[in-house]
Image (cartoon, rainbow, N blue to C red):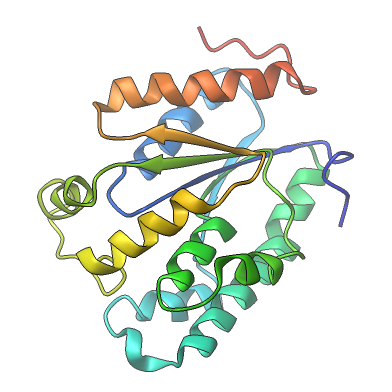
Length: 213
């Protein structure tokens, strides 16, 4: 795997508790970059691969596996993702926008008892993001968005008690590439906050000609 400081592309990840609007913001940034003909791609975790599909089955029944087996599924899915997509795309100079990454694993698995730093250490094979946008909003706001906005019932990962624990863990994780965003405002106001963090990243990279005005 190419070291983080030598790779040609950029990895921007969108993290946060469910219902914070990170997926919406990812789509907005993708559209802005695509409209300027930048080499941008989107991806997500869990992926649509064999391990990712198995993880998604847990949304309806999280008791299918032990806690350790569940964590191993996330690690296996990420290893496949890194090898098949992330590393090759970064080496080709792509701008990758990823919906969830290893910070989410640390927070969500931490909520069921794992040490978040231990989980992060077990993800050492994965390239660090150039920027991790960590969205936060009150859990009740997120649940309202899930239920009213999406018209969905919360899945087994989205229960209020679990999300409170996840949010508390996200608040403790400290990495130099993390930028925290208050996601309780309107879509437009949150997008402005996203761009405030994205623009400096581009100005300090090979994509310094970026113009999203």
